[in-house]
Image 1 (spheres, rainbow, N blue to C red):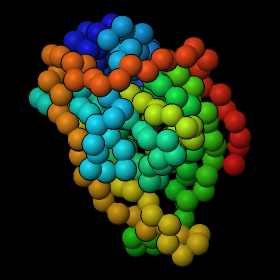
Image 2 (image 1 turned 120 degrees about the horizontal axis):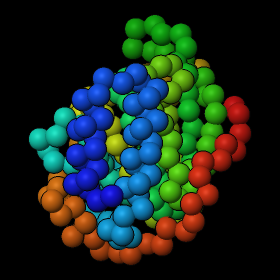
Image 3 (image 1 turned 90 degrees about the horizontal axis):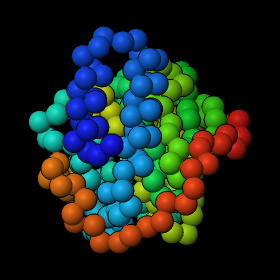
Length: 213
C-alpha cells in the first residue's frame, strides 16, 4: 500500500461511522500494510530540525487527517504529551523506540499529577494504538538506541493543538498548550523523494511490553 492508497483508505474509513475501538483496529491494519511498501525503505534522518525531533507531513495539507514521519536522533525523548482525544496509531520504522504511557490523575488549574502505567519497546514494524481515554492518550517516546530511529504517526483528525506536560514540583506537572509544527511539508504525491539515507528495517517482532510501572 503506497501513500495515495493509504489516504484513500483513511478517507473511506472515516465515512463508515464505526466505534472508536473498531476505527483504531482498522487503522492499525492500514498502517501496518503501508509500512511494508518499498518506498519506506528510505527515510530522512539527517536534515536539520527546529525542535526536539524532526517531523515531516506525508499527507496532503488539505486532508482532514495527518500522516507524519518523525526522525529521532540517538537519545532523543519527546515531552509527555496528549493527542487531543484523537484516534491514531504510531509505528516504528527503524530503531528501537521506548513508549511510556501515563494516566492523568488529579488536576489543579494548570497543574496535574501523572501516573506512569506501562512501558513498551516498539520494535521495527510494530504499531501502537492511540485512543480517547485517560490511559490511551498520554505518552512519551524515546530513542534509546545509538542510531537514528524513525516512527510513523497517523491520526484520524488533524492534530493541530495538543498539550505537553512538563515536570514541576514533584509529583506535579505543568500543562502547556502546544501547536503542531513540521520541519517540512513534503509534496504528498512524492513524499519520499528528498531522502538522504537508507536505513535497514530489521524484522517485524511486534510490540513487546517490557514493564508495568
